[in-house]
Amino acid sequence: MKYDSLKLENQLCFPVYAASRLITRAYQPHLEKLSLTYPQYLVLMLLWEQEGLTVNEIAGKLILNTNTVTPLLKRMEQQGLLLREKSKEDERKVIIRLSPEGFALREEALAVPESLIREIGKTSFTMDELMQLKGELDRLVDALR
Image (cartoon, rainbow, N blue to C red; front, side):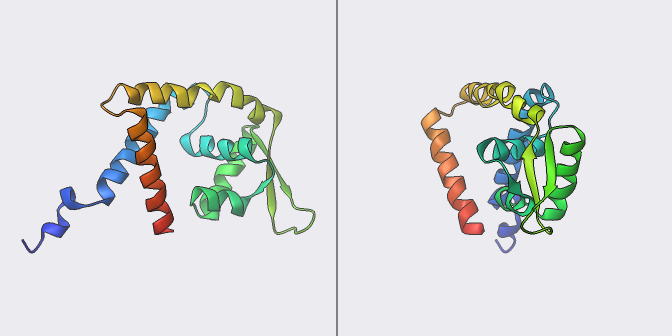
């Protein structure tokens, strides 16, 4: 029919959007124990992996605008999770580093992915299927960038 392409059930974007929201919701109870939001958790994961990233690098890796990331980082600094400092080489750049408290959360956060995998494991997906799905989603993200 003429308008079939406008049906929600025919959209690629909707199941991706819905899955994203439901996964984020599944994270919520685990992150609440750490007093973190999902975006804060993503920032911490980046910094646990590589210290001393600029605001632009964090924004790029999270596929967010800097005007979205900057207030998030300021709130995290106020919470004592990270430190923001001007670059000595280029004052326009702000370097983000973990505070001792932010670094210490890493130990507590270890349980989060394991808990989620256990919860998702209760569904009809096998671990291999989930990893295959992640690979396909990575390809989609790369293609859309």
